[in-house]
Amino acid sequence: MKLTVLGSAAAEAIPNPYCSCDICQNARRKGGHEVRGRAAALINDDLLIDLGPDIVSAANRFDLYLGHLSTVLVTHRHEDHWLPNNLAWREPGFCPTPVAPLTVYGPGDALRDVEPYTDRATALSAHVVTGGDRWTSGRYEITAVPASHGHGKIEALLYVVVEGPRRVLYATDTSTLSEAAWEVLRPWAPLDLILLDATSGLRSGGSAHHGFEKYVETRAQLVQEGLLGDQTSLVAHHFSHNGGLTHEDLIAKYEPYGVTIAYDGCVFSL
Ligand SMILES: [Zn+2]
Ligand SMILES: [Zn+2]
Ligand SMILES: [Zn+2]
Image (spheres, helix red, strand yellow):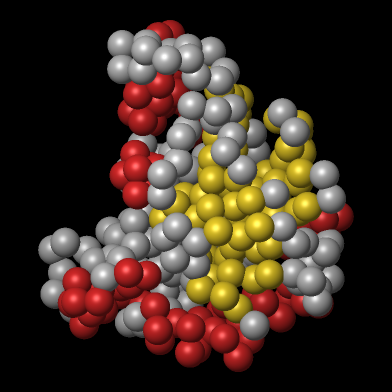
């Protein structure tokens, strides 16, 4: 299994083009890993997690062909994760070459936006899922895990994706996990790769995200539950400039805990 991080930022990206804070200025100056697009990840070449506003540019930055996509997992309807109009670019009027049949899975309040595209698009279907659901899509076994993201105005999901013996947890956007989430996760211990929300850096993250302190607490719980074992890679993911940490700062802070820092284009091979 190969996972490519297409984007590693929170909603407003880094740099936020309107912002002149130290983190944004540093990103403009240094470029490279300091510049982040909105979060998404591609597993192999056929499963995408989050169809956000930077998918087209990320595919082109990292030389990726998306015509093989057969599964899209939507975490939640926030605009940095879900721009359904991206589904239009598969349609014959925009794309004259064949594309694989595609099923989009996600919470009901996000997937109602797929409907306009199911009428026109090539072999596109939508399937509403909720926390605790488990299903098969192509070669993947997928489990939806309830996220803790804000005060319940929208439904947000995390996903465990299993291919053969390999198990990945994609866990943004979320604050401290609920007991319901741990219950869904337990059967998958130990995991091979975990991408965990680290949005808020020096801040707490509140009810929607993880700051550094909360991240360390969730890491400890992952160890206690046996989900994070000796062979598991733990990755911090989905960063805001408001967290006050550059990529270099993030490495210095998280490395002592054995945590890798995601960046746009980084690849994990399992
Ligand atoms: Zn987000
Ligand atoms: Zn900024
Ligand atoms: Zn969100």
